[in-house]
Length: 118
Image (cartoon, rainbow, N blue to C red):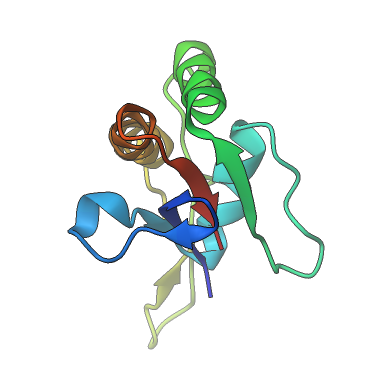
């Protein structure tokens, strides 16, 4: 199912404003993103949590500073005739996602929201 990051204040999530405030990750990538930010993904895949925006932003900035040309593992292609590729090589995905989360988290911090994911 993946996860979506949202802004939350006093237990009330921010209503839909635009896509910038709903960055998300699919099932294949959510564990990677959470681990890089120092969170332990749930074994059952039911990942949710909330973090102060300043703390979350710090985690993002540390991850960006430490990453060196991050890549997801190379994909696999099924033999012909299917030619179906899954878990494809997606160079730079993690850095792009972290920058997307940085933009969202910076907004959250400036407006008094926490970052929530579910």
